[in-house]
Image (cartoon, rainbow, N blue to C red):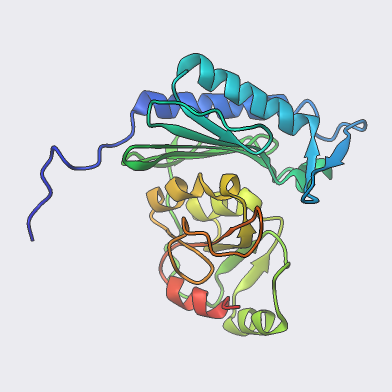
Length: 270
């Protein structure tokens, strides 16, 4: 097989830009802590029924301002504001608070997510967990890190006894429960992006979400592969391809350490 020419190989993401993205996301997380567990936190509901707070809006505004100041020609997409279309070929995707339900209930598993793609594809993914004091980040060709230390997925090879994190049990059927419990998998909840951070850092073996918005998923396209794991849709296909019949939550994801991913897809089959 012919080796790819060095001039056409996909380059690693710029390390300084990765560091900047981590710093921005941590700053947004620090901002949200001012509202976390606050007795006067107000929770509204958007047209799709999902919760939103002043913290969501403030965190996204901060990230947009930081990106615009440093990279004014970049495209920015986010959950709470309209897209800003740029010309640079880079696109940033913001989920200011992933797990707003957890956040609004005082559960510290919520996160701030930031993703960047360029002309070569997925480039940067950041999962910041401000209430837990943890950040998992990854850059294309740079690996995955937990608070600055290189991290990777678990090396457990058996499905039985492995841990599967899930955000909730919407879309689950009785047959799915039977297959999962019969396989010996250990189920845990309060997932959201926290579950993917656990997979990437080797603390659980798998994470499953039956329905996601793009900003929920995007950062995982970098974090999970750079940690050595596998990320697919619910059916085992390309996670980038829309596969759910919903106006906003059009994606699904199964992330794992890769050792038994095909079997996991079978067990979670709808």
